[in-house]
Length: 335
Image 1 (cartoon, rainbow, N blue to C red):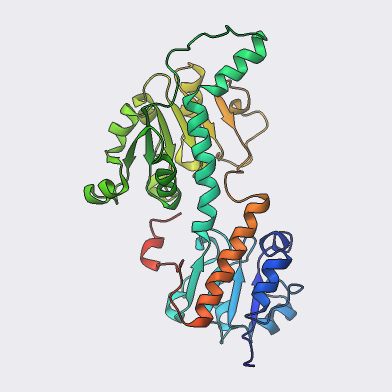
Image 2 (cartoon, rainbow, N blue to C red):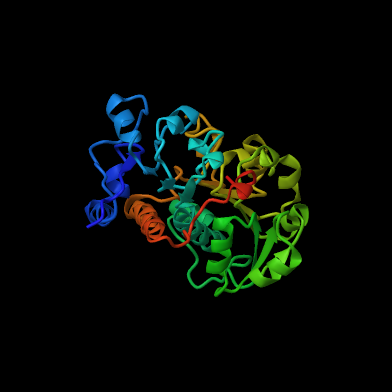
């Protein structure tokens, strides 16, 4: 039996058992030699340095320290970094691509629960569920058999800001339903938008026409506060803003002003900063439904990230193309 290559975990010891539970770890260890009791949370640790000198594969995830030139120099046999999480930007330093490393990410796997959360919020927002819940809880009654005007999801117009992995998955989930889907993304052309089944518009036009706006753009300098005071003012009365991307994409001060007028409402799973200060008005505004950054992989969903990394490892060792290889050309405009 051929000798298995050595792999090294580089992530938080707290999250490793959730990402690699026993059945996933067993499948992993069928392909590589790896010690789950040795986890690189600090590459300066002598035991880690010893393993790093022999490791061919780094299995990274949340909590992985920066992999800089010094780490790469200490890992002369390293050929692949398989990231059981989303973006690799937080662990990268210059020099990765010059070393010829194969890099894979579980960003696609992590996109699934975010898209599912977004779909749920779109449907609930279209039914005005959040405001209706507050009214019912306050009045303790409601008019039976009354048809409420202005709510419902038949023909509801949803505007997606960004055709990211998550944005595209949301498009797929919305496709069987009776929504009209608009898209704003400077990197998508008319032909691609038509193939996705959406109508491509400039951001300002999308904001004017949408009943619900969901943000799925990356957090890069060009997108900082891309939804600011001027953009919020374009949104129609009664519109809902959903943000599951990054808090920095939305100007919260401007959003607070708009929500206070009861002209707009918002669903926020991400904020700037995180967590919010305890006295933030966002906690108390009735027009804001706020959740603690849980749209991404949580609970049993985290196991999917480990399975994604193990699948990539098996493809790597079999000599077949990886399914989720990171393209360095796309990193500049990715989250």
